[in-house]
Length: 266
Image (cartoon, rainbow, N blue to C red; front, top):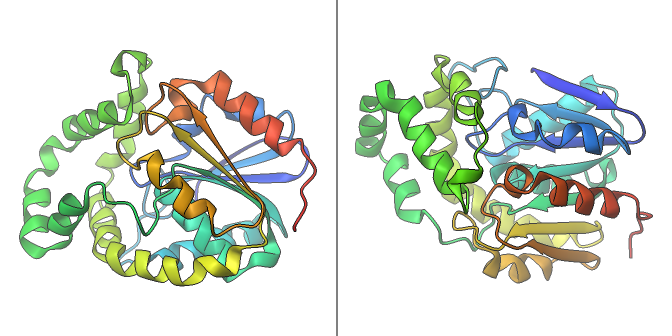
């Protein structure tokens, strides 16, 4: 597993979304590293981590890999910050080992009530859909750029080199198979996540959304917040699905402010 590390202080582990890598956090690590020792990993099968033959890609399997990463780095307990699918991984890891999680910071996390892209996920999870996706593999870099632009509320905010930085690891053989394996597990994963959410009630949680997020709409954030006794939800107005890239300074200041508060479990 490839990861980046910076800063000093208690550990903060950053978990990227489905089409991401540690590259996602290039605008955030320096600021967060002033108050935490930051670990930004590439989940196995993605980014520049190793590709897995015949991968087990369920949410539980990925949560176990996240916990194994923490163990390998000597991290007994940490704050977990996850974006999108990475937020779902952080939630499941917290259910598997709640004693290892101080706080959850979830950026537009995938959750059981999201209705966005259900048709696309169902199609990609089917055999005909998977064949279609593989047929489009030569155009994957261009398609990835298209989907990335849709993640921004305002695509003119995409900095030079961003599309290339996201697309490069997508060309590594085995990446597409890994993504399709995750999609095939999606429905079952969300059902399992719904079952374990009540167990996470004592964990202090910070939910952060972009107000113009169309990938995981903020309107369902309240449904997720009700599962936590100590939950704070904030909105970055004008941002899409990647507020840490569109408005990095505002994102960093809000996350640092939350981290600087004393963690308490009700």
